[in-house]
Amino acid sequence: MELKFKFLGKTCWILEIDKKFKIGCNPSFLNKKGEDIRFVGSEDESFKNIKLWLITECSLNHFDEEGAKIIEENARIITRKESGKLLRDKKNSNIDFVEWFKKREIEIKGYKIIIEVIPTYKGGGFLSNPILGKANGYFLTIIDGEGKVKRIYITADTIYAENIIKNLIYYPIDLMIANIGRIKNSYFSDDKTMDLVMLNSFIRTLNPENVITIFSKGEAARKEMKKYIDIIEVGEEKDI
Image (cartoon, helix red, strand yellow):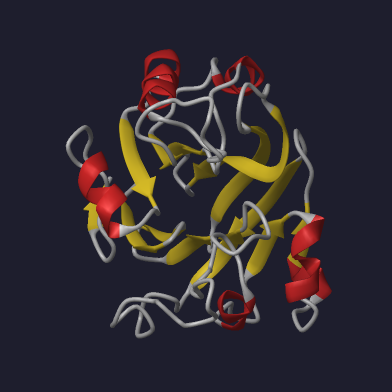
């Protein structure tokens, strides 16, 4: 089974399956000023033939009204109920509001896709403990007509937590798509997602065959992060 990954900025990406259909995640294109910041060329072919959209949370960096507009009418949407306010114009039959630990099974062009919602945990500021976050991680099992299987773990914005690992530890993982928010762990940080130490803990524990690291901060922060780890660039494609 051939997979092709393309990063479109912020936390938005697409994954093409055997050149037959695409899975997309987190269509979000507006900055805090309401300006459209999608990179030139992304509006052409990238968003066509996306049959499944995974939305991890309804926040500016993950889903917005411009993102909702590019979702094709026949696409299936898996998300949380908080996203409903931006999906009023979509067909309700295509939208599943799914909570932690729940599963959905769908079929797209002869492929069976099992979507399991994995919990996320958010860090806080000074000396806070991890708290439950209103976001979904996802674990996909994609099975083609010949029985070939690919398993993909999408972390969403989360810190490392044992309650996540225990849901995944028994599965071989072909691809982990990880969101990074911090270079170094700090109790004073307001960031709500993992740092490099946490990423390494995920990798060491789950042993994924491939890892794609997404870092959605500004250019200065990206430059600093690239000193430590390979992060995917906006517009970059990877064959898996």
